[in-house]
Image (cartoon, rainbow, N blue to C red; front, top):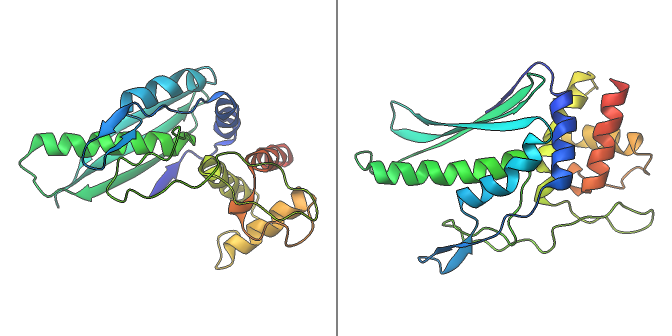
Length: 222
């Protein structure tokens, strides 16, 4: 579940600026089980802290546990204005009496939750997980040109798309929280970005630059 302060406009602007300067986390740790490398928590924190603090942002992560045996992490992204957004992830643990296992789960969630909250990527897809899934090729997207096929967005745009949803909701745009939410958001995005109907198909097809422009327009019109 995602929670947030009544407004997050200043946080959104600061996050966009932070992402401009955000480096790619280097994969310098090894997972012997999957014979792969991944960016560990220390590397992720070191690589992301400066660009966050330079823009008045900070991250607080707290371990949590539930009576039903689940453990996890609550991650809160905060701005000096007092605005914030937070989310929690938790799973059942197989060995409740093993504190080392619990610590590993928390460490794992802290790393992925931090990267997800700020839109940070590793040098290649971080495959220190059981799925071992392949990375999507490429980590950059260019603005669309009329007549050219739309390229899919990257993981870097995920937090920006969430912010766009919140900003559109604040403007009480019709249908944003309805059954056709994705269609309505896409239509509004095409109008605000002066694109032809059907250019994007889905919000995830917006490039990083288009997401930034859309956020700027929504904030200015607010």
